[in-house]
Image 1 (cartoon, helix red, strand yellow):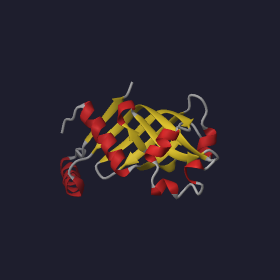
Image 2: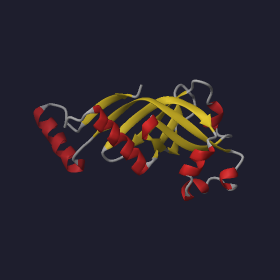
Image 3: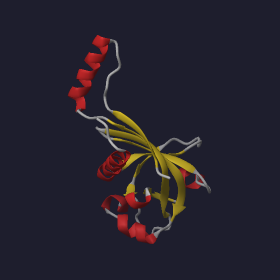
Image 4: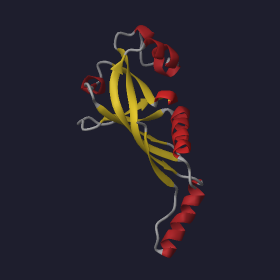
Length: 161
């Protein structure tokens, strides 16, 4: 399988749009990464996350902070890096608001602790695996028999500058 960078980028954004959830954390921060729901804006290579302004993550963000969003599903894994900032963009709150988000904010869109995190993506490492479990088992057996390593997919580094 040989994919263009655009194909890999399209698969990445489609996978995040379909599944949304990954682990977000600040690079170099002592806190653990935490599960977050991402909203993709492909045209600007931006990920948006709802959060409260009183969380450890939100309080730790300062100017120029760098973060990573770790995403995985059955056929694609990625480490998405970028610059993160707090943003209280009401238009985006309205755009991405849904029942899942609302459950976390008892006062709705006017909850005083509600804010957004904006991840301006700079680069990503993406692994794409085709074929599922059967292909993996075959590649594992073939590698062990031939003293080689399994061919389970493709790794690509994407630069969003």
